[in-house]
Length: 153
Image (cartoon, rainbow, N blue to C red; front, side, top):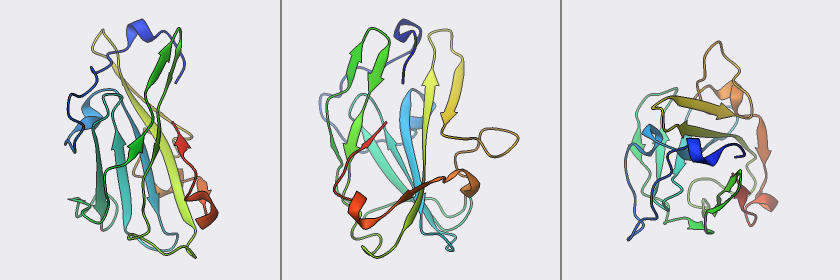
């Protein structure tokens, strides 16, 4: 993310990084991914504080449950400098899908400004309103060769 970081509410680094709910209510990065042709998909939330969570949905915004078949992601330090904020995380998802499956993914960001305004950013908002759960916005294709690489957000 690039911009005037002084206008963004950034959480303090977590003393003990853990799974937390509702990270999307403040500044956080998100990745949505699913197997094309299937209705189920996952939502990963990654806070600049280091806190995280991974949810599984059975269908569009239905059956949300914390995904238990994943371990804590490995996140590199959040870098803030001037007008840039970066977060790089990797998570082992081998228990969620096979190496032969192609995944469709969407990367998004929720930004809480010091004014209280919240904005929603994504590679593309394919609907009339921002909706990160809209499978039409899962525009990035990931293959098994990508699983060893971090996704930079």
